[in-house]
Image 1: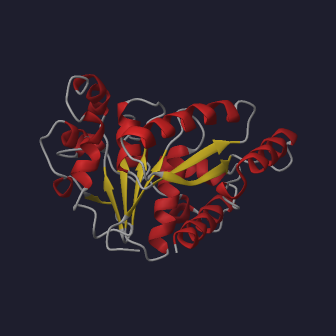
Image 2: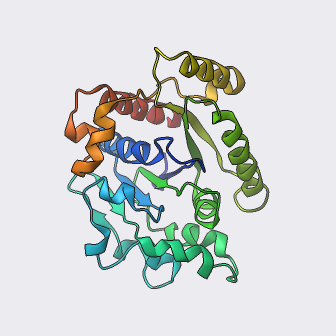
Length: 257
């Protein structure tokens, strides 16, 4: 890997697919594997920030200040208290960014332009995208080297995936020709559930090696940890959820090697 961090957007326009859970826990697991990680919270709801114990309202700035042109990345970084893991926090103000940027030239590349040269000290930069295919997600896809897609093992999973893939193709065509799929991650998997198994086998048949071997189970620790402002690994390291994300981090590192 060159000295430039690998930028991975974590996106799915469907809400409730464990997107933010994946962003927080993959970031923490990569940092435990001695990688230096930056997590960018690009969701106005700010759940990745609060899930790492950071209260956006108490901060002097957020990722919104990049889009409004007030600050550069290095001025907004927050230490999370987790070794080797920094955060670029979000704020509810970000809701307005999509509207404010509509008439601005080059609005799709704002994040990419600001990250250039600012992320060289990181091995990985993870971007937690909002649950939509709007301008913020397009900014993330334009800035990223690859896209990680969390996919809940449920009936409508494939439909949402098609929409997302169409957006990726549009971005490849005009804004970021080199973006590729990092992998599809099956989440909220319950092996006792027929539908989970059915969706899993359908996705694997369709996408082959693009699907991560590791699946993320339904797990109470993953649900509880954010309310304590901690990744699962720092809440209950031996839980199935925490162990699943450690295995995923290993797979991400191996795929990149």
